[in-house]
Image (cartoon, rainbow, N blue to C red; front, side, top):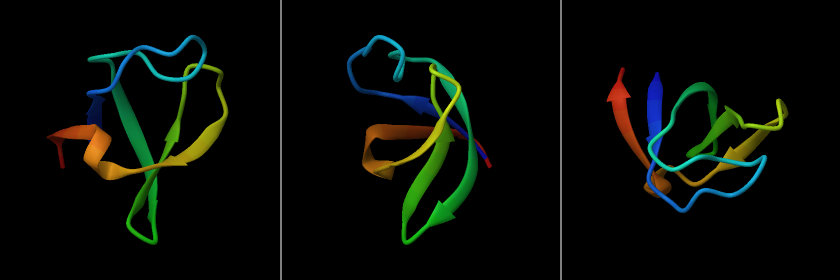
Length: 52
């Protein structure tokens, strides 16, 4: 699944309107590889699904 970050740009974390791949869904949260290259869990309400 591909999602777009709706929040503010945070240096080396996530960039506003950038599309990210969801690596997994864990307990309802999205595991996303962020701009630092590491993967973390993020709340899905901060993203817009652009491709399932």
